[in-house]
Image (cartoon, rainbow, N blue to C red):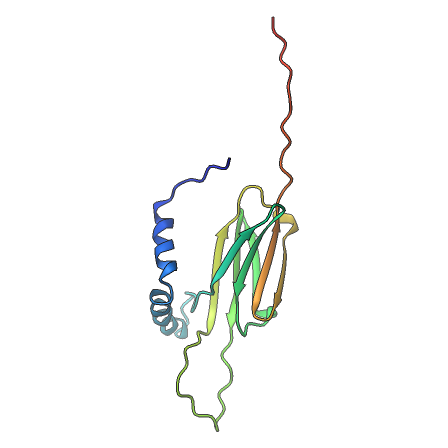
Length: 151
């Protein structure tokens, strides 16, 4: 059985994540204005799904129109970070834009990996706007039977 430390602020983050279409876009739009002025804050936050099989963890991040050259995956102290930049398309003079709902600019997402994650064998691939990061699990330690001499 794995014990998970309770962190009350994580639950608050979950509430905001559930309503991210409302809150996330408003906050990102506010940050977009700051990011245009050279602020280091991420301009948008891509959505991610995390799943697990018997042999690995899978992190799938939706990165539409982001070239794989613009994505960076790092692991530091069992925290995986996916960061990069979605570049804005060049504007055409003969095109009249009526509405833009896409977010552009820098992004970053970080997730804590479980203790059994094998960070030395992580593999990532980007295809069709989805980044898949596969984190293998370390083999489970086999329980040892120890015979104790009774005196």
